Picture: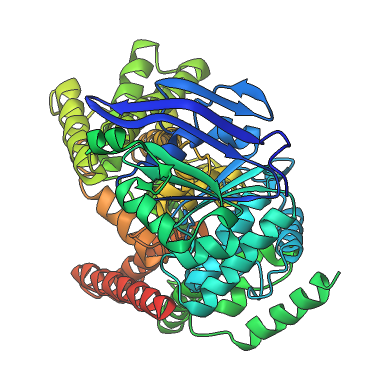
Length: 261
Length: 352
């Protein structure tokens, strides 16, 4: 686990405004293969805007996004997907009426001639779940509507992994889950990193963050307040960074932090 | 590699667990995909209702109901509505609605008649031009519907209510309110032609229905249609071009209405400018009786076929039995409510 390798995904100096509102200020962010980067920050800190910029939903105003060291332009969700960036949104983005395999291949169905190749998609869906050691799902032909919150999250993550993705961004994956289901999802996040994915975990839950993250990037009012190794900070320091933008030597200069308010 | 054994076990478990909403029908090997998608619980129930109706009428009036002559008539009467209902199935699965189909049918019939009259109306070329014009007219209206729904963000109920009025009014303007007669060669040709004893109009309707049934169940276009109705945001995030797809779905409904307009000209010999204002409701009723959810995301063409024939069989059977035809409306209304109740009940059972 070293930071010396090339980051899979690297943002530098990214700015984004909506009209007069400057939402993201000079954001730097690096995602390394096999590592979990936790992106933390209070509501309105810019986490969602940031991932939407990475996803290509919002174009960035200035700054650079590099993928495997090469500058890239991401103009839409398809560009992001083509690079190997997959985002698991908070509302999961699963279609209730479709089954697990259908959801995993939605938008990128395999075809045999003009008809869908159900057999191969079912097989691939099953193999992906097996690769992630998912045992909570009985059959990939189950309708998503019949799944629990944890199972749905599992399917959404497996869907992201199916596409040989390099970077998986998880938006509050445990927000609505109970204890046991949170456990399953965190295990899955571990396995994502173990299988070489660069993982970005957005979370409000410090226990989750400290359990799975290798690095912690803290946003405060649209600025990166700190980008630190998990082992270098304590629980309370991170909470302080989230709420005030600084903690001891870490964080924004007092003037910057104050100005942002 | 434990996946295969696990999956076969889970299939078995699911079959055992089969609940009232027919989980069993959904489990299964890839080979069972076609049957699974072409049929599920509601179609089975509603199919049984149709079979029961057929049996009862056959037993009551074996000499007049259960004759090939009568049944062929029944099918021929339903063929045109079937086209509208199949298009409506796609629209409703996207959780939309299309009230304009009857208007588009009439308008397409009128433009086709005008063009055929202008080109002589006797040559095969003129009649073929007619069908092209009818379908193009329907297509253009459908694209307009779709564009207003997808890009204009106007609720489909309002958009299609508007285009219903525009197309019906437009047809009256074009004809001056007087029904136009279809070219004789069309009415006496395609309108009466039979192939292997079955009207050609029925063959056309059956072929279109089969193709669209397979596309809905087995092709990417169909899959995306379900996905949009189920969760359009999820579909968009997954890379489905939702707006373009919606335009295509409404365009398909319009295209089918145009074809139906042409076949209606052939069959009835007139444009019927004031005879189609409730086609939309008949088509919607058929689709909903067939198990398609008004909430979107669920439904099949098989169900719609059954849903078209239940009212048709009732009407035909009541006529033969000498029951006042008004009863047909009453019974169809009740069947419609029962079908939606069943759908609600299934959704509740599923969500719990």
